[in-house]
Structures are given as structure tokens and as C-alpha cells.
Length: 449
Image 1: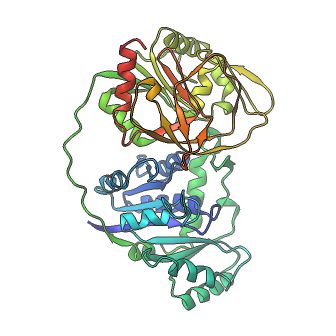
Image 2 (image 1 turned 90 degrees about the horizontal axis):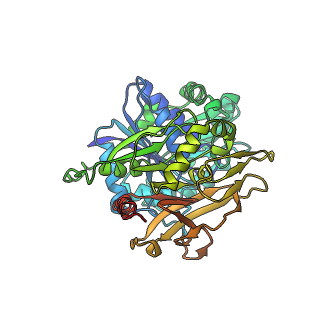
């Protein structure tokens, strides 16, 4: 298949990658193109926004993660090819700086671009710079000749004359300029921790539309697509996945709980039927064999979560009678006794796990994680990512069933708690290459813990 496919990267974080990615996704969708979005790395916030920005006639294409720490290169290639097959174009948003990896450039955006055989378009923050971008571009072009640099777009450009200076630098180092983004308040999206705010009051749709309108005036989208034409192999045919069970799996999904890897849901679907429910808005749980609480921003919605007493009681009853529950980060916080927000207000949660969490005196816990659950009976290494600001103020007598290490094999104090048939942790696990993990959980629950 020959189609436009490229990785949007930058020299460093906070250069404007996500802003331009969302704008380009929306612009391509407006043109009626089915564009498949991907995100390098473990970020589950950007993929939510990618899905929203790629909507055509109300339907977006699910953003997918490409991460060669959490999964093998073969798996990442398979995900990319599978979801490109019926798309008109593919846009991969990079992570951090182009060559920033877990060890040197290992697992970096550059490594993923080379692995997929697609070119890179660089986003350079031009604030306070003109001809000085020439050596920067020269370095990114020549540092690793196996990375094909298709062109550059400049962010935070003051005026058209400023862009002309930048184009002169491009010509002198042989990098094609593909447009620029003028400084404008419409391009500002409120931040939420390291990602973007995807809470309901952020008015994401208006922000994405404003971004697209702004970028359309000064970026040559058609030339960008021409420069990024790529030969994308057809995915290797695989036998259809046989459903492994008839379980009903209830997945929490609303403004408070929405950080989930798409591959995890695909794998859960092999074990039965998925039913979504809202811990904030629904009065009762679906009749289910398993509950899955993903991460999110429960600390922003503590009042509404507390006010839904019937749901909190039903969740607690489900846990206490030995129902299977898997909870990550924000989901774990919700299962605890209480959450204290940044202002010091404490709200009651489910009381299903004897722990309390707080957003006060918060500091960032961030990094890849290797999880050994052999103490619980699961003998394959699990991989995932930890990202949170909250902290425990009390963890009661909960039992930790895991040994957790960093990407560099240093022991970390992150726990995976087990109580009855409830498993809860701050780690967001990626099940792409451990598809038997939900089966293990269901078997454990079937044995009564």
C-alpha cells in the first residue's frame, strides 16, 4: 500500500507536537480522509484526543500506542500495519525529543520511525530564533542518516517575515519547510499535569477546531502528504481470534475514568462481552463477572463520585463477596476509603480497599515498570507505565503480591495489592503481548482466590 504516513517529532518536549498533531488530524478528517492516529510511548491522554480529532461524521479512529518497551518490535509493527490497512493516511505523534529513548535512543521516536519505515516531520519551536535553526536542522538531518527527514514545521512564529528567515535556514541545510504556526491564543490548550486536559469542562472540541482553523492558513498540508508518501506493507494475515470465554466484563468509562490502552480492551473482548458503565452517572452496576476500573481524574470529580452512593455501595458489595475487580491508578483510588483533593477536602469513596489517597503535597511518580506477579501465580513478566501525582496516606493491611522494577531493573516500591479477588495498583499495564493475563484473573476468581 502506498499512502501518506509520517512521524511528527521535535527536538524536545513542549515544542508543539500534540497541538500540531490534533490540528492535522482534524484537517485531514475535514477533507474526508480516514487518518489513523498513533502515539509513541505509553501516553493514554493523547490517544483520547487523537480519537476525537480524527472524527469524520461523528466517528473517530481510535488512537493506538506504539511502545517498544511495553511490547516487542513485532507486536508494534503488527499494531501499526493492522490499523493502517483501511486508512488513507497514518500520523504517528512522537514522544519527548526525537532521539530520546529509555537508554540513549533505544525505544525513541527515531527508532520507531526507522522500524516502521516512515519519514519524520520535525516541529521546531522558533520563538526567539531565526537563522540559528540552521545548525539545529543540520544536526537532526545528519546525526542518523537512516532517519528520513521529510521536512520541518515551525511553531510560535511571530510574523511572515520571521518565517522567511527560517526558510532561508532551511534552504541552506537542505530541509524542506512545510509551513509555520503563528503565535495565537487559540492554540493554547490548558495543561493537566504532563498531558492535556481531557476533562469534560475543557471544551476539547472547540479547542481542536480552533487549532485546525489556525494551522490551515499557514501549513501546506497537501505538500506535507506528498513528501510523506510511504510504502506500507499489507499486514500478515492472522487466524481470527477465537473468543476464549463468555464472561461479561464491565468497564468504567466516563470523565473520571478514561485512561485505557485500546489493545487492553481488544484483548478483554476475547474473553466475553464488554459493557461500559459510569461510576458517576449510573445508579447500578451491570451484571458482570469482572469489573475493570482504568485510570483517569477521579480527584477532579470527588463530589460527584461521593454523591453517587448507590454505585459506591454496589462496588463495595461486589468486592466483598469476591467478585473479580482489576483497578489501575485512579480506579484504585476510587476503590479506597477516601480521596483528599489539593484543597484539603476529603470525600468518601467505595471503601472496598482499606487505603486513602491524597493530592496534597503531591509529587510526580513517573516511569516504565516491569511487574512480577509470580507470588500471585502468574509467571509471565508484565510491563506497563506509572504516572501519578497522588500519594497514599494510609494503606491498611493490604497484601502486596508483586515485585516491581524500573526499566533499568531497579527495584521500586510500587505495589500490586490483592484483596479477595480485587487487584489494584498505580501501574497501567499493557496487555498487548500478555493476552492470557485477563484469563489468569478470571481463573483466579473462579477458584475463589
